[in-house]
Length: 118
Image 1: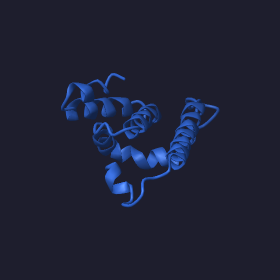
Image 2: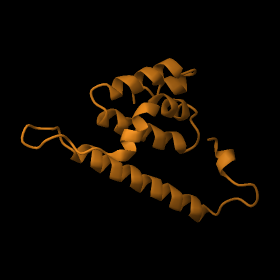
Image 3: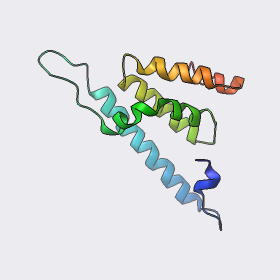
């Protein structure tokens, strides 16, 4: 959703609230990063890698996540871009190719197109 839909009408949010929310999202992304990279590759003795339910739920929504990321709204696109990267690693071997395809196919400006190789 655009920021205007999420932000309630009335007095603006206190900077401390924005900073707290930013910190919370960063911590959530850091936790997801640890889960994704700490899974390891499944070996014969280890069994299958443990699933990450949040990323499992996002797998069918890569296109929508790319559309939202390409809106380039404030800090939101940075978080979404990082989330796309984690989802690409988590959904190997096809996750990265899917995300790259959608970012390239849906880009409408040089700024949007520049997100794909990042």
